[in-house]
Image (cartoon, rainbow, N blue to C red):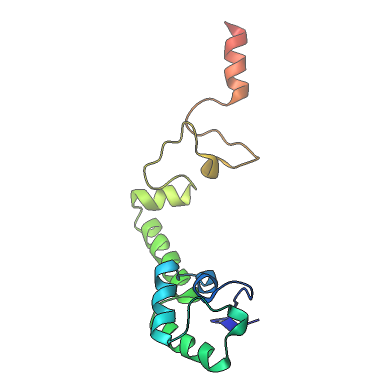
Length: 133
């Protein structure tokens, strides 16, 4: 199993698809990396020679990927929280950050199984108010 940047690449996938398993590498960047390294992007990851892997590794070192990129994203979010920006407050409360509505359809923010009321009344409160009428 080929290994790059501390991540195992899927053996059965083509190089272009296998490189997208690295954090910070999408389809476009994987094509660019394969082209710059002189590797056929349609080749399977298991068929890569050690010299091809080292050429890909050398090209990938030009980009901020994996741990460095994750650390940068986390630092940016922590900075927003520290300066008490609106986006930082939303991150801290685990609510949608980019202006999505929360009255309905906020499943990631409200939790999949364990429901947490955010925008409107919970089901129990709604049934109680209907019964009292």
